[in-house]
Length: 181
Length: 269
Image (tube, rainbow over all chains, first blue to last red; front, side):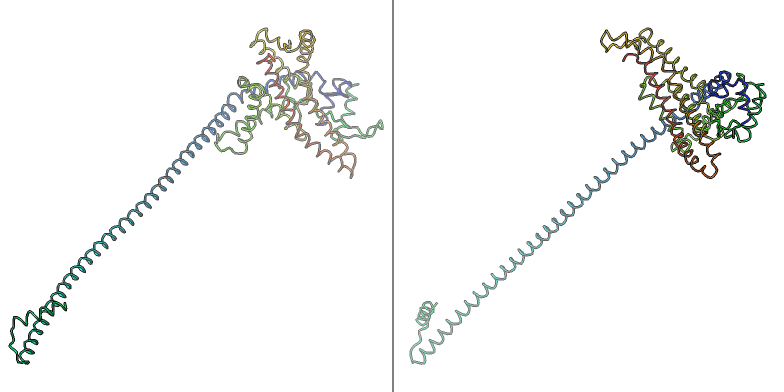
């Protein structure tokens, strides 16, 4: 590398050798020729293969990203729908549960009421029966007392030597009893 | 006689790989930072003809090869989830595409392949030139001038084809006061024709200066013995800067191309 440059530059003369190789016009045609070759080659590589390919890749990526975002949006929508449905079913279940609880409570209340009524009726019935029997017992007791009083009165009258007039005794007993009653 | 003189200097140069020579004249260092830019044939010692395969040609062809490797081989998978090479290729594509779209406008997207061609050539040439012992095509004004002229002629022709004579209104600043307009027209016209000059010299100058500085410090490193650590550290720092410059110059060249192209598409201020 070191030998050739000095030679070629000095071949052009000392003025060029001491200055800049850039100002040596003898190399210009060569550089310009190869530059044009290189530029044309790069242009064809770019315009025929590289740029369309990279552009397509970028477009495809953009498309993929857009699609993915759309898909994600859709999934998000679905998820929120599912969440809504879940919430709704949860609320429904709660309402249903409340309804069932309420229903059961009402049914039990009704049962209870019915049982209470029945019990009340039974109690009232038994009360009435008891009252009847008590009245009967009382009546019979009164009758017994009357009988006993009459008999006692008759016995007393007989014992005192009187003629027991059963009708008068009865009347008297009735008067006394009625008065006492 | 010239041949003989050449031979002696060649011998000296060969001794120290063209970097440092203890000169007979007693000037101390004899560093040849510009030798790296010499265009020379690869397989012969003859003159550099138009079609000779030179080091410049070789590295431009390597640029083509690397473009193909990166943008074609790197994207052969066409994967939706890109690998490393495909990521870089997509990054370059997106970078330039967005630049064309933002700077020049949506209607300029059909010129995107041309601008991408310029960018890929310059950026890969700049980066490959950072490999030691390589050749930097973009450090040559012949190369950058052709690139700038392609842009200049392309933009100018496109401007006239798309807009006809009204393309000339680019130079007639209708928002300025009428009295100022002829003066502004001259300024605009001059600046328009200076564009390819600044466009090309900016790139070549930056690359050439950076590489020359690297060589100068490399020369110091060869001569200072134990203290060569200082220039080596400097080389490391400058090399990092050059990596940045390699990209920035490609970026600047491309974005200026977009700006010029905008004038052709929308010449009315």
